[in-house]
Image (cartoon, rainbow, N blue to C red; front, top):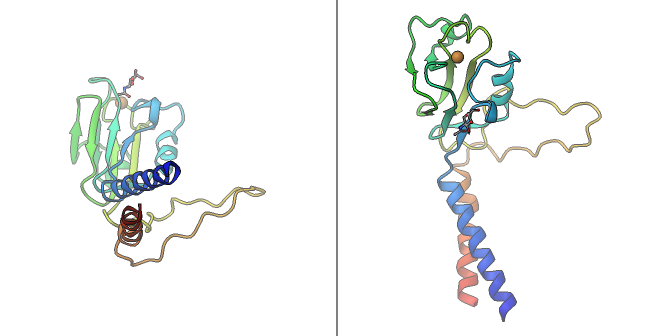
Length: 183
Ligand SMILES: *[C@@H]1O[C@H](CO)[C@@H](O)[C@H](O)[C@H]1NC(C)=O
Ligand SMILES: [Cu+2]
């Protein structure tokens, strides 16, 4: 029957795309979206952007800037606050630049050109270890505004389970296999 074949094909496609997402979830974060990596007009431009992102080892940051006008300099936490550029961890001077997030924890990026960093061209992010989805970095969630009609966010999955892909993918695969058998 045509309709049931269509349902089967749809189920297989959904399952296949879900498995792909679960196992190869590497996000490319375009820093500040269309604004790119420039001197912001508001001091909290990059803080606000980062608070809406979830960073995981294996992801990358895309800093869109024009070579010689800006750079991406990774610094220590101590250097980040006062915008010290004396002992950078790493610096990329050619833009646009892709920075791969290889280690978990906090990372600090500034622009070392002129007084750009002190003007707010600085970004700090918290990178979660790979395979720890469900344990979001601390202090990224904010309470819903008073009077909001939005339901509270759903609780995270139980802590300590190996990975979301196991619990979700195995039954999905079984379902797809069962359907393939019957159709
Ligand atoms: C980078 O920024 C420039 C200037 O805003 C923009 O024209 C260009 O499309 C951006 N490039 C990418 C790859 O986002
Ligand atoms: Cu700059």
